[in-house]
Each structure stands twice: as C-alpha cells, then as structure tokens.
Image 1: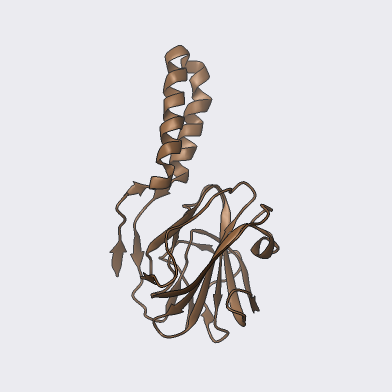
Image 2: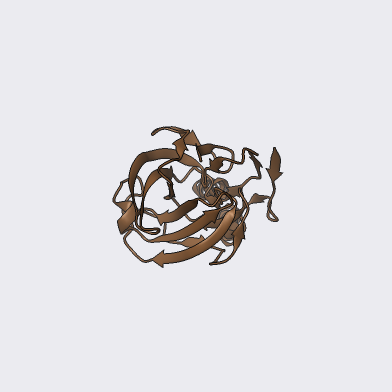
Amino acid sequence: MQLNNYPHPIIAREGWPFLGIAFAVALLITFFSLAWSLPFWIIALFVLQFFRDPGRVIPQNPAAVLSPADGRIVVVEKTMDPYANREALKISVFMNVFNVHSNRAPVDGKIEKAEYFPGKFVNADLDKASVENERNALVITAANGQTVTCVQVAGLIARRILCYVKVADVLARGQRYGFIRFGSRVDVYLPLTATPKVAVGDKVSATETILAEF
C-alpha cells in the first residue's frame, strides 16, 4: 500500500483564511475577557477540525473504485447517469460538517468531460440534491477503459465547490482534486457490471475505503 501525502499536510489550504480569522477573533476577545472568549475558541476549534486534511493509504487493488470522500453511504442503486448518458450503478457519499471535506480521485484515469451546474442548496442527504443542487461533474475514462462519473454536490450550508482539474487531465487514484465547504455529498456512477462493496449506512473514508470493484 502507498501513503498519499499532500503538499499542505494536516490542514487544508482552503481553510487557512478561515482559521486565521477565527483564531484572531478568539485572541482579540481573550485580551478583553477570558470568560467571553470561550465560545470563540470553540468556534475556532470547530473550524480547525473541519479543515483537517490527513494523508491516506491507497489500496493497490487495480480493480478497486475508491471512495472520493469521507462520510456515510446514502445511496447504492441502479439509475441513469445524466452526465455520461447511460444506465449506471450509483453510490453516494454524504459528508456532514464533522467529516474531512477534501475530494479525491476514485480511479486512475483521464478526464473526458467536466461540467459545472448552478443550482439549489437543499439538504445533501436527500436524493433530489443530486439533480437540483449546485454541482460539478467529472466524466473519467478509467485505466481499464471503463467510464466513471464523479459528481461534487453542494449541500444545505455548503456554498462553495472547488475543483482543481479540467478536461484532458490525468488523475491518479487517491489524488486530491477538490474540496467542498461545510457539508455536502459526492455521487459516483459506475458501469452496471461493477460490484458494490459498501451498503447504505456504511461509514467510509476517502481513498482508503473501496466502494466497488470492476
């Protein structure tokens, strides 16, 4: 197994401005009143835990589709993949505010299509979030020739999807490619021949949990 480390260990770079503001405010309030500063330190610690971004161990199973996010499985079903226009096996990971929110590539492969869709911000735990919420979709041709679609979906309080890759980029499994702030989900669409390795309700870890094999 290979350990995936990032150039910004432990704390995601997306969180640095928020952390700076949270800790600066907490320090300022502490200067005037230690008692009144307690809620601000709690907020600062919450922001710190939200933007944690640990390295992950990458399974070397060549047939594995890895989880692109930390969270809980909320969907395992056969449905239409509207981004690749096909029937597919859909597996959805819901991230609450206590999960790591970095998004990582589920497979080795080349990005064939990247599309951003503005939309609503309903609870990402709901099925309709997949088609109604703000989202960013990547259609990937995996190393084995299969098509994998990975969709970042904004949630109820998430207001910012960040994606750092584009069409023709080549992804490596476990590679950090994006981030969603403050609660959201990621949908993965796979060929119908893929075998799911998770069930609804399972807790998963980005990169380290195998969602399916194909």
